[in-house]
Amino acid sequence: TRVLGLGDIGPEAGLPVMEGKGLIFKYLGGVDAFPICLNTKDPAEIIKTVQYLAPSFGGINLEDIAQPKCFDILDELRRTMTIPVWHDDQQGTATVCLAGLINALKIVKKNIKDVKIVLFGAGAANIRIGTLYMHYGAKPENLIYVDSKGTLHKGRADLKDHREKWHMCQVTNGGQIVGKLPDALKGADVLSAASTPGPDVIKKEWVATMNKDAICFLTANPIPEMWPWDAKEAGARVVATGRSDFPNQVNNSLGFPGIFRGALDVQAKTITDEMCVAAAEALAGYAVTSGKMGEDYLLPHMDEPQVYIEEAVAVGLKAIEQGIARKKLTEGELRASAEFLIKRAIKDVEVRQASGIVKLP
Image 1 (cartoon, rainbow, N blue to C red):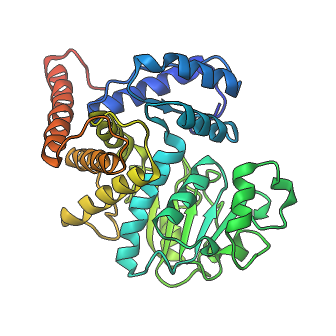
Image 2: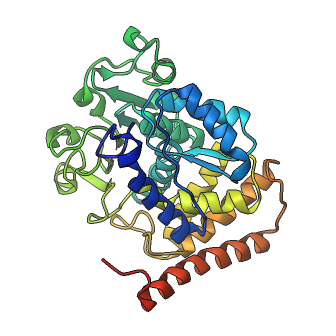
């Protein structure tokens, strides 16, 4: 019901998207994934179906479910299942955005505990992004959400029936700023946008009111909320988008293959926020240790397979530390397993392409 850039297109039209996701799981994470599209929009039916299917799988990736149903479905399945259940639109996006923010803050020499963060868009992705930012150390009062009607604050009675948004109304926006995006951006250090495809959804003059060395994540697809060069001209120092043809792509594919690899290798019962943070730190750390990290290289690229190995190791170790891993492996064993499975998957595709079994487009 919420396919990226397409919306509610139905299970038949959504199947090729899921098949593509399965290919990425396999190629980048060595994870065998089977696409299943359900012909129902009833949360109870979706939950029950996943519970029925669970014995056949080591983990479940939920995909393209519109809010607010996606929150309830994920929460209930995480509560009742004993295998990892993951909603990539929420958790995957948040993990990769956190990784990008970790390195962006290093570049501008700011601390996450001190920065003012504006989250433009209050959908599933940004709700989880803000949650993970706070889990990592951002102060709730320093976050301001902005949806189509304006800032989220304690007076937004229209959101009382929306559990996640209403919660953010209570805990964020310490100054209780009432207004629109331009009002929220004044004096902000970070803009995390996951809203409406642009360009020109966000104006240059609004970004110009942000603090010096501002960070802008413009993640709407297929066109970001504003062009990255416009954000730079307006004074932003670090800019990221969801697109591969611009510097600093913030893409879920940098997260979920390695995260699932690590969770499956230790037979984890769930994927916790702490495991997401571990993956984000591994992702950010790889960009630093590679010696490439800079204003135009916040995160590694998808053609760097070592990053998925590092994420898998970090996630597996965190699951063991938290006591939710059925299989206890050493760091060396985790690394050897992830390296073998991921490199084998990549080699398998290369051999098929070289032999003509899989034809390049």
